[in-house]
Image (cartoon, rainbow, N blue to C red; front, top):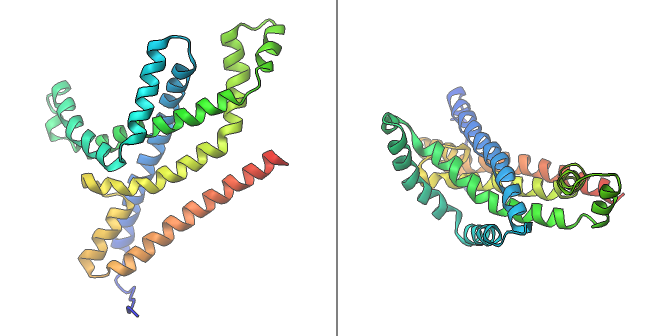
Length: 226
């Protein structure tokens, strides 16, 4: 059995871990918000009548869902710095790792949220449109005020479940050398020769956060089915 010692845990270690957690939370929150917004646009494109937009949205979703996330992150890490430097002359001094992670995760997650949102919209009975029309609403008003709110209520558990997956996947930013919570913990373990202890601590933190979020999703599902 590997002997475990936690005497290396100091205020500096916890501060480094907390700084990494802030990066993890920042990437997760920005990616989920941007992913839902862009995913909604993609879902509307796929459900729309204009064929070019439907084909574009379908191709976008299929491409991003077929690519490994580390490949997407590395790809944007190579593209984003050059794009920023072409737009801003002083961008060469910026740390573009965070920008690359935010862009990569947001566009990647949008493909998954688009399918969730599309399924949620299609799950709303067509009779809701007829009921809205009988009240004098136009099709766009009916969709924005009647259909879309119902769809989001139905798919809230799936959106939260995808957020849990996204939170776990943020550990992959190590491929672009961004010091999130997992990477910071691994670096501390390697520096102090306590990699096993740090992996246990990091794993426990991920487990507690994801387990509590999963319980929340389960409670929401039970409320909807009651």
